[in-house]
Image (cartoon, helix red, strand yellow):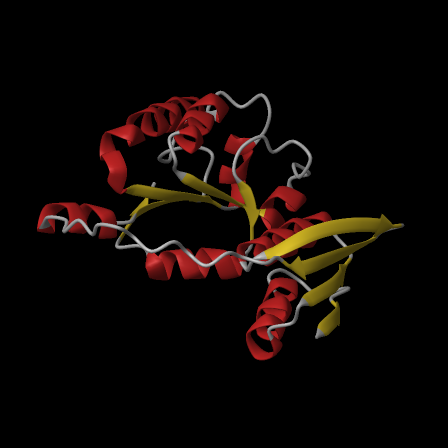
Length: 205
């Protein structure tokens, strides 16, 4: 089955929600969505990929057509030996700490000081160890992911270490930074809400 969706003019995260509903209800072998902005293109493409689709994007004028084709997956190999983990190991695996950033500065008062504090905060996050799961950036915090920001390298180091970083696409678009983002994945409000629900602990800086 093939599904085609017209998502022109829909605000974030409606294009993703339409794709989600179509995939959950029809489980199509291919799905095609037409959107009219970069943020929606990034979000829909990433969502399709997470659902096991091979994604191709084409552009005509101001419109983007995202086509997802279901990829075949091999059956998982049977394990030869099962290892029982300790309660401590299981607890560590199950712990998901999410850091929620909604400002490029840490604290209120002096922005120069706030920028230094944010740099130090990000530099210290690795101390959380394996429990650090995801960082979400909304509003002016998305500026931290842009080229030239002093915090960019710290975020890149965190991403390389396995930390998931999600950057609000609507916010990037608002600040004109969609093409300047150099770390993390462009995200939408559905991802934000779902991440907050899945996290075992949320740190708001």
